[in-house]
Image 1 (tube, helix red, strand yellow):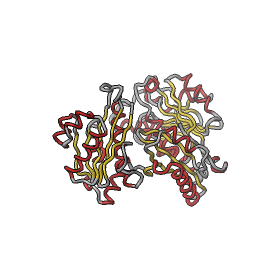
Image 2 (cartoon, helix red, strand yellow; image 1 turned 90 degrees about the vertical axis):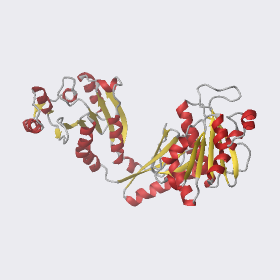
Image 3 (cartoon, helix red, strand yellow; image 1 turned 30 degrees about the vertical axis):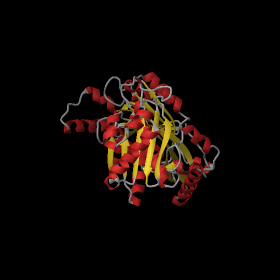
Image 4 (cartoon, helix red, strand yellow; image 1 turned 60 degrees about the vertical axis):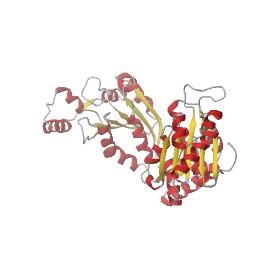
Length: 432
């Protein structure tokens, strides 16, 4: 799901409308994942252009040709990958010639370059390789600095076509050498983007809050990067000052709507943000984990410099471990069970007492898929935060698969610490 809000038409006209086509039976059959299209998309938007469609098509001249003809007029540029090799199923160049009624011409200079390349690497040049020197008439050859398959730039009617290799390393090199400069030359503007990272609000609720808001000419899209939501603002300005003004105003508008649901800008993770806040204040933290199995501690220590603030972690999966390592009372476990606010509080207080840390976070729950009851269903989790101010437990139900449950429970626990650090959460209230 995405939300797009555009500003004046003058800026919109600076975008090229680009389509990406991936050819190959392996992609169509799911044998290989189409990572090329994603990479190309990311590179195109860097230059301020729009990806309007991505398609895949099997190795068939008729099907490829039909798809190419379909894009004419709809897209300003079409980037096609795959099917440039020497084998019988490499049909893209032939399909392009067929689509636009062009002859295939043997380029003698290209053929000579290819033969020299094979000679240098000690491989025999076969008759099948000669096929790669056939270029649709009027096409511009795109050199391949890391392989044998040349690319082709072809202007057909109102659309520019770029035919690139499917091998990722060859694609990347050819795109950067030949396609990127062409794209850059067609964006007479300054382009920039901001990523805002959100946690603690569902995608649908974010969508509702952002509907109808003014974004001053920026474009907004959002996607789930579980368990977070990433908001991406893209803007184009006539110069750097105009660009900065658009991004500053639009990001301020978003932050005004969503508040501290936005926890960071850029690449910072939730764990790194909380770690930086702890470090700046000279605080330390410890963890006591049951159902998350050490994931919180692991995620904290994924951040460089975490030794400045991470004191220790306890993984206490069994009741015996909770008693022996954290001093949880047998009476609490007998009366309330391992998955209870009382046990979560005892775990957090035990971890903070034993580690002498400023904060301790504890998690206990039912990850599933079994083990639930009507009173305590699968997905139930209690998270407790302990600090000088006090200790408080929080109840959630994350009815998801086991790994997703662990991920969101761990992130929620560390986000509660963040909320307390910024003064948005009290630790003196009742169960929440």
